[in-house]
Length: 548
Image 1 (cartoon, rainbow, N blue to C red):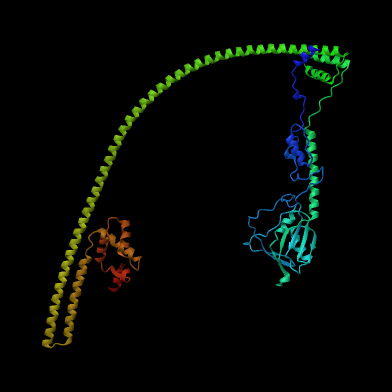
Image 2 (image 1 turned 30 degrees about the vertical axis):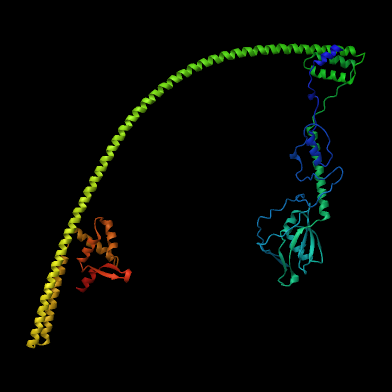
């Protein structure tokens, strides 16, 4: 028996494979608490995940011991989702009914206050009703929110309305703050401000409890189905000891494929205490066969471990040889690569030096080219300035000559005027002395006026003879056309800006002198008063033709 005990002691069996866990204590306690049952202290994994639980289940109900005390004023315990936040502004409009009209409250005022919603609330309290309001009018107004199951009206201008569903209560709360007016009457008894609030009713709370019980039953059923689905299969039952079963077990202990199952049965028989004097020899033989099988397995294990060590050593040697060869090849390749890179670096250095030299030459050539271009540009500008100076000198000479001619004409006209004045004086004196008649004096005046006019015509002809070149004739034609399309005239700056587009070298003084030389074609007028006084030139050649 001692040898048998030694043989059994050398067998290492993992007892965790025989112990099938059921649930985790904390998870099972949480799940049982959700079901309202007393937690059971079992060890194992969680049977049901939270994802399969009913979303609307209330864990505060105790299904085993009855309903625990619940605060019905806890928000969010009903199946209807909570109302929207009050921070969002809601635009309310006028509601027209057959018997009355509902006017919305002032949007600037705060929303009307309401109590906390009871669980499963389907009933609302409506206060502030008009004194003359009837149940028919109340039903007509609140039928828009949903089906009404009951209306309980009081004599003190309030009532309770019960709806068919919970979401209809939210629609009725929307009417809180509206002013109801019956018909078109302005009497105080026919108007009132509505106050709609949640009401706590026993019927609503009872229906809500029934729904919670139904959800709890569904949750228990689902948990049970999930537990049955995830429960591992029960191990096969181990038969009791008999001589026939002992003979079969001895054969199984010799078979390698059935040894683990046979050793489990043998241990179970020993733990049950089925060893006695009659079966001691058979148990001893089975323990001896199991011990021999275990020793054989241990010897095979040692042999396999030795082979594994040899294989590891051979693999290590082969790996070191491969690594040395690969390292040598890599070292040679790295050396060659290093040499090639060094040669490339030298080549790049030579190329960089050549590029620097070429770049320096290019910089020098570019600097010389820029200097030549600058010199050419300066020469061209000097030539243009010289030409401009020559043209300005010619204009100055022309203007000087024109001034001298004007001075000569002025002196000539003054001399003629003096002569004519002296002749007039002498003629008058002779007429007074000799006593001639007035006809002779008039003839003298006519002669003097004719002489003055002839002198003026000669001067104007001299001035009109001043078209010196084809350019001046072209300018006169362009200016005549420009002033003809401007019947109210144009100042000299506007005319000069237009002529600048055709000839950039022309000046405003040159244009003005040309216009002054042709008084029969162009005349000068002054427009405006004071600071707005402006000098304009007009085309008058057609007027001169008509007067001739």
